Length: 202
Figure 1 (cartoon, rainbow, N blue to C red):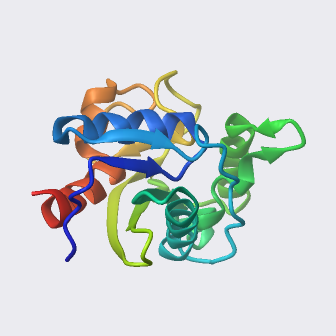
Figure 2 (spheres, rainbow, N blue to C red):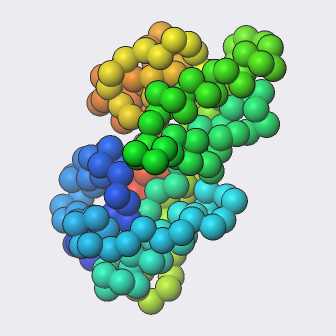
Figure 3 (tube, one colour):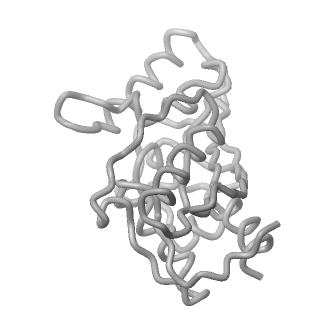
């Protein structure tokens, strides 16, 4: 596995929530972080039907166009009673002509579960795939996951995306209610990051 020796990387994302989380996780390693958004890079079309496929598209695009190593994150919620949906299409479910509307997307998930009379607990998982890519085309992939259930109504103003309806196993607070430091320690992204740190940074 290739070690990351460079001290500056690009986060291949235009999502401010992800940028905050990822930047915070990299601070202890003395790595300077910039973003695809700050560099004025486009967002490439995510044409794959897997988290790893889309993570690779984003990381290689940013690495090639910046000349720096690039880290991408493709993540989403998979709901068992919906056959794994929304999955890689999690953000798409929130798309509107005026930008992303995650409360609408969460409501849509709950309504589909109600239509199916899905039994409780309505199990789900947050999944995260990280791709660290270099300008020469090499990459490393790391996958993380946290299991839980979908709850309703939405709870909490913290976090982003589907956090207010996701209750992790063994917890009483949704990711939307949870102190960010606690969430970061146990999230799907933290799981994938630990694997990346062990493989490429330690």
